[in-house]
Length: 458
Image (cartoon, rainbow, N blue to C red; front, top):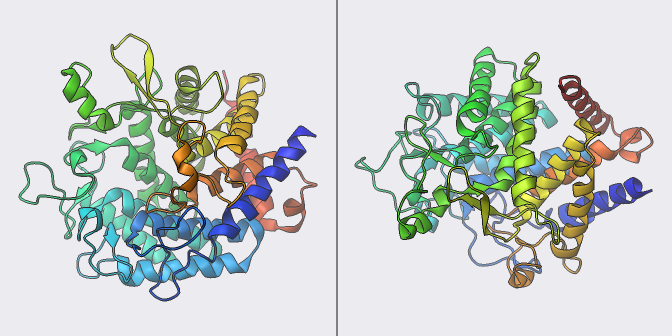
């Protein structure tokens, strides 16, 4: 009965609390694409600059929702965003997607990106285009995603030291702190580094594309990113280093003076949400690649989730804290940011339930899944206006009246987590399973994924 209640709660929150609140409200019928900024009570604001990441995530979410519910209205919403990406955000002269455009799709000074490009943003465009192609089978969409893949590989991939450059000028040239190109963008502190965040979302994007395009080159690049993240970017303790130099040496300020260390926490800390999100993505990628007997990925993924539980779980009121830090190499991971951002709690739901299925003998995963969902209902879900707050009201009460939508907050994390959890909890008597062949296909995929990893447990 508990399982049935949770399943119904998840479905209700996904359908009425999130998707119906955002769509079609967020669709910009006048200028194309999607609005970026929405108040806590769903009113648009005057500032509506559009970032490739947000635009692509809405395309992906709408495409997946269309398949999940067998609802053509979401397909129309997804196609709407595709037109803006193709006609406004893609650079027709040099290729690649701009990181930021104004509402009309022209040059924007917002956040200082100007006409620069980021590998992170271009990765999300592949993620979106592959999902839209899966839905529509439109060859133009697939060819566009292939073109973006080739652009990233030709401009961002480091053929000498491996990994990917994140910062690119308009013509696709990587730049660092010694380059003539000087950026005024809001992420300027990260210039010159390779990073885990763009890497894990390249993994995610390439996996989405590989599921619809079995290219040998894509296969090798996806496998390379998986091994790079698993074996190079993830510490043996079970957490991701955040930034790296060009030779992929981890960036650390642990031994720097306190003021310098505090100034650079953004470059060097433990981000629990990224760790267990990556654990999920690695398992999916390895399974998509059909790697045989890949116990290394399973071992590392489990270590990443267990490290987050042991060091980042709030034992008093549930939920994952945002950030920790190892002040000494062999010391304890101390919490340096005890807030609980919405996306990390959503990703926590997904991965805890998945691991409860792979390791049913370890009761902690399902118990924590239940605790986390109850915590989310109490502190993150806006029962009055809908959707989730940016941060837990337990920790940051001001988020009750903060924007529901920004360039960094949309529907991607919550919708994916809820859809995945619903699929994992559903059985053959569930309404969507009986009525929707695509939902049934997704259920079979997750069942196969879970059984594959269960068979490799030591």
